[in-house]
Image (cartoon, rainbow, N blue to C red; front, side):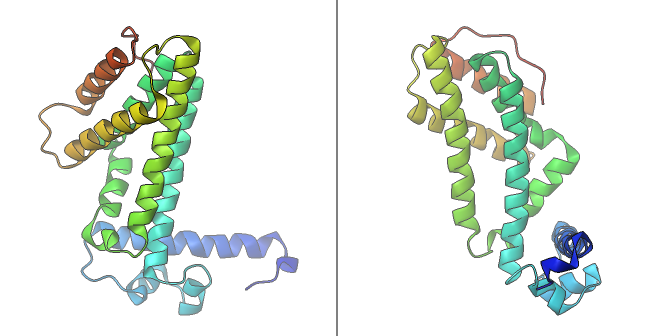
Amino acid sequence: MDSPAAGGGVTSATETERVRIMQAAYELLSRDHGNLTVNDILEAAGLSTRAYYRHFASKDDLVLALHRRDADRLTERLQAAAAAAGSPRQALMAWIHGMLNVTTQPRLRARAVVLGSEQAQHARGLAAAQREFRARQNAAVAAILADGRASGEFGQADPEPDARQICAAVREAFADQMSRQASISAEQAAEQIATFALRALGADRPERPPLA
């Protein structure tokens, strides 16, 4: 490993290596690059084997890093949208619409396609990472529902089980949109889920806040 005593330049250089490796892997996976190997990634990144193993223990480790990066970014976007909302009802709406809005944005959709590819899905540890991400989603929605119950907006809410059901519905709609077989738009799907959720929670239908 490079010594911390070398200063910020070393940190910047090693971070640049990591970004180049991750970007190369993403681009190769997006092209459905057969049985992708570490050597393929290094050739595309223009880096050495030593540089690769400075950051990743294996190809699977790299795929997990790609998943964590995108999961963290999406979580931050959704949390920011919910935090900016004026009420728990609007926060829930913002979360539902924010999730399904990913399927309508070319760059975000492309990244979801890459991580949903057969090669990526075979990465050891990815299933566990996906379960962890789903748990984080459930917890975020449960927190919104708990706030709504405390404020009286969600009079019928049972936060944890209700959050699991809402998140499951959103994930199913998300997969439907990603398949390009959906009979309705992402916007319409979000509206349907939100309408059902708010009715089940004992809330009136609010005006939808702007998307994040």
